[in-house]
Length: 103
Image: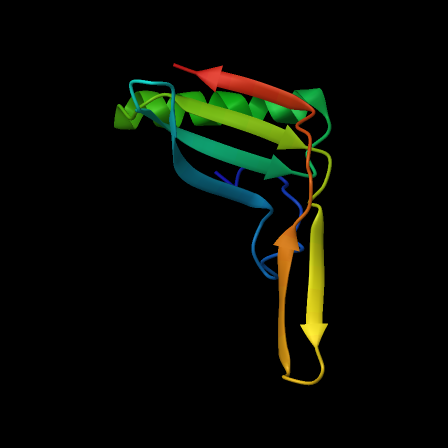
């Protein structure tokens, strides 16, 4: 899908597009769903195009419900400890600018 759409490079995973997928569980009945997070795509037309691609993909592969969240940008905070040489990062608070549920 990323080859069809212009998705910015990730600040947390350099060299990769700023799109992340995982499986989540919700509600008392532990219903699983796929969760896609897309960063840097703020144009509604581009978002709609990505949603259509996700709908086609889900339809073809007959997967479970999918939730797509669009964010203005990644909130990635890097850290380092000069005494140990360790470094890393963590995601800060992020609020979706659009949420789409694909059933």
